[in-house]
Length: 395
Image 1: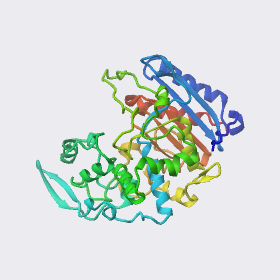
Image 2: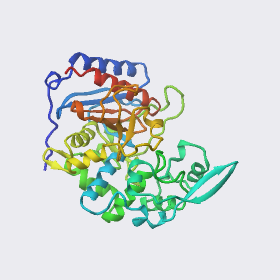
Image 3: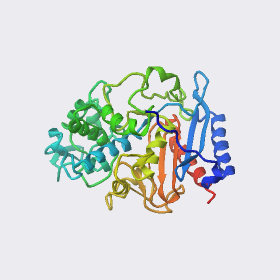
Image 4: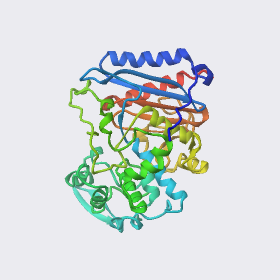
């Protein structure tokens, strides 16, 4: 069955300023002209209708192919909210609880140990408690990313080749189950491989590969035709590419090869998608779990996911800056000020390391999506996009 196109509107009809949107396009065109950004696709919707969809620059700077609105991007960690939604769908079906210990589904994580470094030595001590499903969703599990530090646990991850692509999700989780945690579960926030492990939990419960779970439960119902763990052979001509060399550092830029189905279906960072597909996903969230007559989650479940789940647990500000907490798969804005970019209390977002980001601002009935493939410049362009999107609100 064909999926209905997203509803559109003239900017003024949904409270967007034509002049503000022109400034947004002009600013990004200037960055592209200066050769700091290869290209971008930006999308803004308000009150359920798209009022801005722009593609600028090159889809492939090497060939000079022009950016198109349907270009396919590696969205990396924007995979995490998708897997989080799939998890909560199983919660709504009564197939797991957030308080369940991870070891209920993956026995290798029973009786975890925590690495304690002191005076150049490392001691392994029993964890104060087990990892829960909620810990995985909010990144308080003690699992980490090896590239975010140089401590003993980071080195163990590297030695175990935990990021290799030639492994299954089961292999990946099994290896992590043999390694010590970086901290006691529930005591701090630290970005890491929690959502990869969560993807394996979904596979155990559903009895099928993660890619199939996401396709059946989310992508197909929402009409996200170009989202998955690889790009179909007929569509590889639409893949957006980065500069070969980082324009600021001169270092080689290396992104995932997404032309073939991967063995490792990374729940934390493996998906590709388009601006429109990402918009469908966040419009579903803005709609309280439903889009176009298709309901994935209950309204209160979405509200629960996008509330702060950290309280006094520290750490998230390293990634988000001040004024944010973290829910179940999303950073959540807690203060109207403090941040260096505008927004509303209750806004929630996440992004990917190659330069993609999306957010929902319930108070403004606003969603926005930025798609780039510029890893080294991602923080700058996210802030620039946020500033200019909010500056375009006319009422």
